[in-house]
Image (cartoon, rainbow, N blue to C red; front, side, top):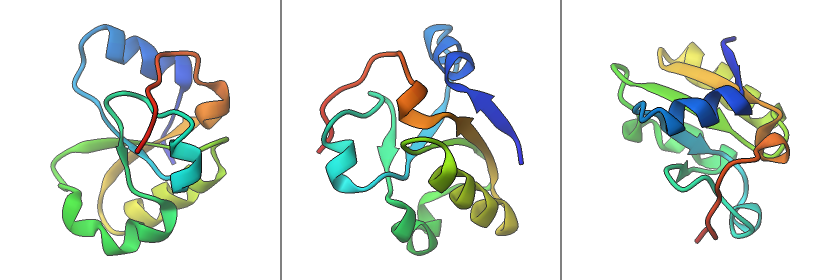
Length: 101
């Protein structure tokens, strides 16, 4: 499984790179803060949201600490999607966040 650190992801964002970030935490976790450009699809909804993903795009998957995002990455990879797990998750994220919905 491919992985990236939160610092590397933050640098990519600061450098203006196009990044697709999917936050797989639960609603109450996201309400506390989410990366501004991230989309929220909770882990349990990933199997039902495959139409959202484009196999020609690359996605960074993040959760609270890295466990749920790793599970999402495993599932998405098995289904032919190009994904990278964000190590350490939001606990390690030091970049900007906004209040989630």
